[in-house]
Image (cartoon, rainbow, N blue to C red; front, side, top):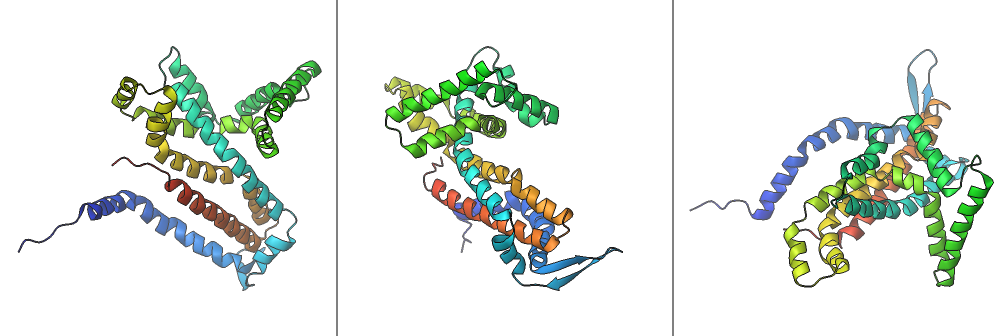
Length: 301
């Protein structure tokens, strides 16, 4: 009797596990062990011996209670970081997709323009970062060194634009969101380089025959975007959202607070509890967002 082989789904599962096996091995050997140590330290008071070494005194969940109820800044910083993330992530993903579509067009100097958008990743010099920050602040009228007439004109333009939106009946929440987006324009541009690259690769992988058929059938550019471009890049939207959420937390004030608590205040137990709470918050957000987006994600088989 002929032995039955693996089904297509089983072969895909084996291939998938083989593909992620290097990461899985590294996760178990290097990250999971340290994570367990962090959880254990968060349940203890870590007493450092000035002469060298340390000892642990089991304290239960007291470090978690202190971080959530008694610490003066952790709650505020964590809440602010989550709020900023909820504002920034949609803007970064939308801006990245928009710029990727523009950079995917054929025009003179396209390589130079692409390089400009990737500079924040390629060049991480603080001097360059400060120069770009100053230039962007001049654009939005946020630097005191900008001449008063320029700041007044910029502020007038922003107020006029918001007034127009208000007269059109836009809700106040949306207007506040737009104002926050303008104030964060530098951070949005700076954090969009990798996402633009990912979207650009996705756009270049879309078969041109799809657009040719749509054009022959009389589809407009708007219809081509929603019927072809958006579904084809939707898996990468999920990837970019997850990447942006993680990236926003790695550079947030939460990390600085945890670092200061550990290496300045020498309270390693409390810093471990803060890191566990922060990681748990990120995981909850990732699971929720991943579940909601994956339900609308189109996968071409």
